[in-house]
Image 1 (tube, helix red, strand yellow):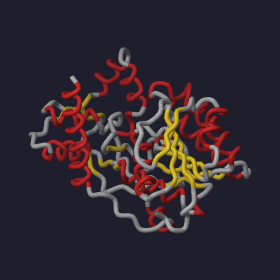
Image 2: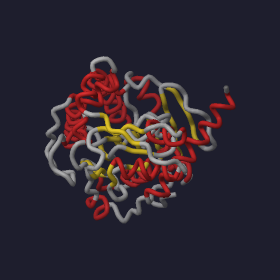
Image 3: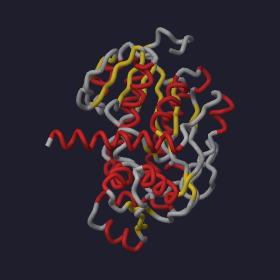
Image 4: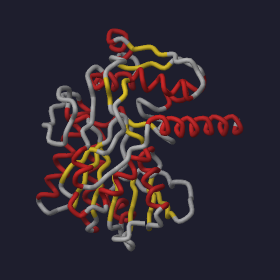
Length: 322
């Protein structure tokens, strides 16, 4: 437990998702008072209060965040509905959190920067032109403006594409780890040999909790710690080798991707962010190390091993259920 905050109360919105569920893990493991909230009630677990709420409804959010000192915003709408639903969702959460006087910790990504500079620092301008990047930029601006106006204490933590246990929906999730375990081909986006930063879910959660408890973290965006960059080819190869399989890798060429995007909604969304996979996409998290403190990211080999174990166990449980 963080001895300086033994009596704080934490609420995790989006507790059923990849990031949110790991935030609950970190808080529960340190004996903190935590309420896990999802669109449906998260599964019961020792020492954790669970609740369900429509997070688009400020009244319902106000009810589930009542009494909180810190609220984690780890919720998001379906990937294909970000422009239509994400701003309203975030506004609902911000209004409710402000009402109860809690700190809001927003789980963010790197889409807002757009193609260009790498390594990416927190001081880069928001240059994204794709809809998802513009949505992320607009939400960050609005939250930080609320902080400057004294309406809301806000901390923003930014992760790269992640992998890890329970990380099924990421670009480095099901399509890579389940494919490796099944001996199927993994398909990469863009250029397979451009270096990229990859976030590991347990590390993301641990860093977010540290930011939540850092008094001077408010009113700023922070890049979360990551291990050394890997290309898509290096990551996929490491996953297959850890799974005891020969690597099977294919790239999705731009013309084919563009054609498939006309009929497949998810591929259409991914086409809009394809630029992230055609150039170096590297995170500079030195601000976190300097101002928040030392952090040792989980080495990729251990992170991959633990993630494969989770996907393997999930496969076994699914087969038993069938």
